[in-house]
Length: 370
Image (tube, rainbow, N blue to C red; front, side, top):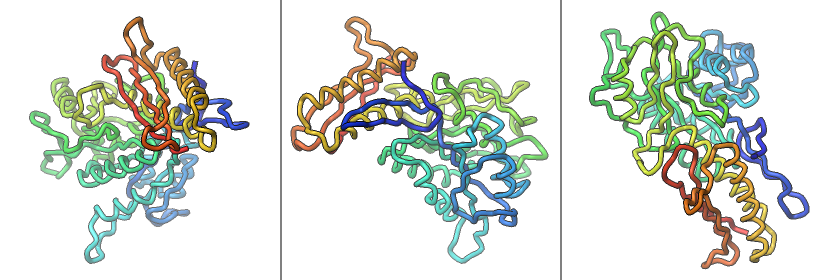
């Protein structure tokens, strides 16, 4: 079985020029972005990523009743690990000439690009349904993942309707999400019932995603700490949202996250949150073991050792029922480590894996510069 640890990402231990241990992290770094009270006792400033270790600390940093404080408290109440929770205050003063709200959100999101390190996993969550903000987050997530900072984005789905009070609503009949990213996840509806309709349940949902066991999908997970939703959707409306690649949040007695699909339009494999976490960790396992070859001779023996070590980890994930096993002629996973034909200083790692419940193999290609 794989060796799991209470940290985000994958850690590869190297000694004497070789890999001695590989541990797979079961945690996610959670970064929340939202409006705060700048008069709070220990306000860190706008656009300053700050680790939040407790509920009391959240109030000291961002104020008793602010949107950001409530999002943090909700995340803690729904499973987020306070050892890996960060928050960034977004300035809501756009009175300066030429400054718009989206500029302030972009600045806040950009400030957090170094919170998740290479080889780690995380969830960047915006406490808003604003389309421009979520779209910008999507682009940042894609860029970070290119540096092996395996971040997933989360926020509210952009509403397409509102009531007479201006509260965002969703007409699900022909709803279409404007995003297409298998590392971006959006939910709807997210507004709490009166008198808290200015607040959302996004923080609590993010806590569920960040704190959920890696061996379990986030599906029909209950949200704690809320009395109700402003908009309650029917079973048919929830299905409409699923068809639009939106995660429905339903209230039928309790409030529940009714799916975990991404916004991706791809149909080759089910790109939901659970499987995204699995694939990300496999990528980091291969990257970490591949990096361990840096400085060593790029010969067949070294590449064979790397291939065997990656294969050992994949077998462990099979035993943990995260990946499908190979059965007879059915090849559900493989790994090949070869010298790059165009550059003898590079190693190519070609893999195929099949997360549990998927009928099509996911192919992964990495290049390691030795």
